[in-house]
Length: 182
Ligand code: S3P
Image (tube, rainbow, N blue to C red):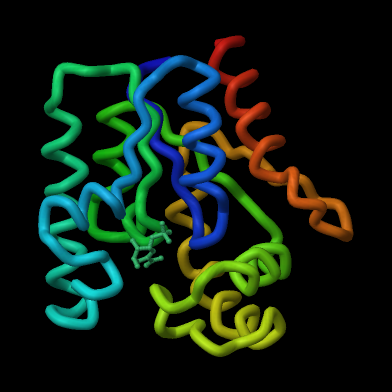
């Protein structure tokens, strides 16, 4: 397996939370690319998109990831932005730079998880309940799946009927096992 590790998947998939837990467990660095974007450009991805539009954001987002990949540190877990892999040749870039893991969820579970988060940073979902969120995200998730599914590994999130709040820990555990057993 080549390093660094890139976690990809839809908003709410646990890329940041599970990624941080995974990096701690491995004793590696963790970088959230949305946070890195904010530090470098002075605006959060949501504010940048509101101000300059999605195309400008995607161009900058691409360079943030590629510039960080030039650092001579391999033992890093990166949480990518949810739309990153679905833009131009980004998925190919990820596969060249390291090893990618798609955190795959059933759409209704993603909607439930998103409904529990602060939706101020997600203008399209703001003020919506889980059922309404599902209506918004389901078509986008379907369109993005062919990109996400090109990942080197697909990790299926726990699929029980009820989310019990331990899913991110379970994902981190699955990722850890996959990485150390390679
Ligand atoms: C986006 C997801 C966000 C952020 C931006 C766009 C998307 O990242 O990059 O708001 O298009 O899905 P997270 O997946 O980390 O929330």
